[in-house]
Length: 189
Image 1 (tube, rainbow, N blue to C red):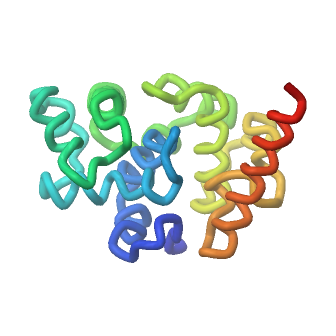
Image 2: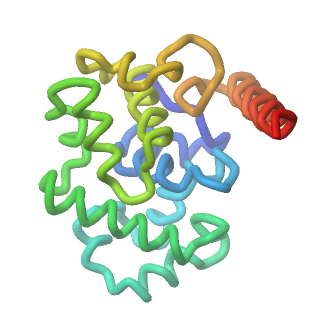
């Protein structure tokens, strides 16, 4: 598997490359927060907990986990609500996929099914789910039949989302694209 380069932090990127649960959590945290900081969330948890085991995270006392998530530097600018989402995701991965997050995509029967599975996770609306499915396809080679249709424009070449980030230069291009989209949306108001 190619080495992911999303955060600009060697240790955090190594974890994203080696631990699919860290990658899923990074995507979950990528909301109202700088992309590269969101994807460092799993690494922050590993350094505090000593693991990133979905079952252990799911069974932690919510207040205790919130404290771990909130310890500076927090996993997100809204660590309370995000800690609950992370525990919710960990619970689903544990209960529905036996603690193996890769089953989320290896057992998907199609791109549409994979998108539906991702959307069933706390905090994953359609757009975020499409971006994550695109990330799996573009960077990890997870390409169930119909994935392009399921993710729409996120399947296209370009710099639309984290799925297209492979280095510092592409990260900046994705940032520029997002700023252009925000400016266009604001101009049309």
